[in-house]
Amino acid sequence: MKVAPTLRVLPEIATSVGDRIEILLDGGIRRGSDIIKALCLGARAVLIGRAYAYGLGAAGGAGVARAIEILRADLVRTLKLLGCPSVAELDQSYLDVPADWVCRTIGKQKLLTI
Image 1 (tube, helix red, strand yellow):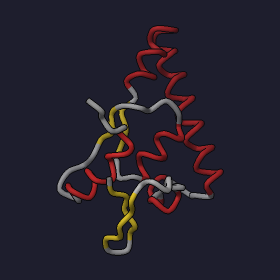
Image 2 (cartoon, rainbow, N blue to C red):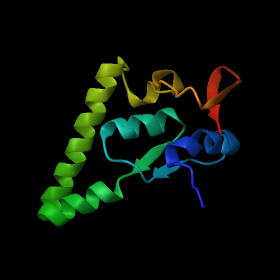
Image 3 (cartoon, rainbow, N blue to C red):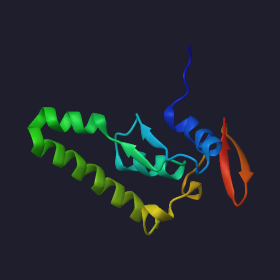
Image 4 (cartoon, helix red, strand yellow):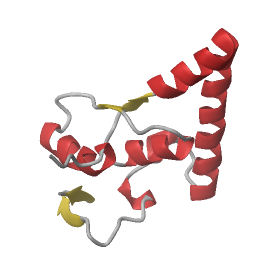
């Protein structure tokens, strides 16, 4: 069975649920730029279980703090490279969407669909 990647289905889920529920993305977060992509595609927040676990295994509580620090620094760097003032300003306009992803417009926002 073939399963679509989390980021690929996130826009369709966000469109389907609208403002009725907050979406937390779990899976596939390895870098701050992954957090940016998820937020652009409709997630309200991301879960960082793997980074947390790697940090914990490597250095206990200090390792967890360092893992979070690394993700935060990469997130801030990515925002600066995008010229985006804050995560609150993120939307799909900050993404370069692959040509094989179909897009549709709902209201003012261009949304990806599968």
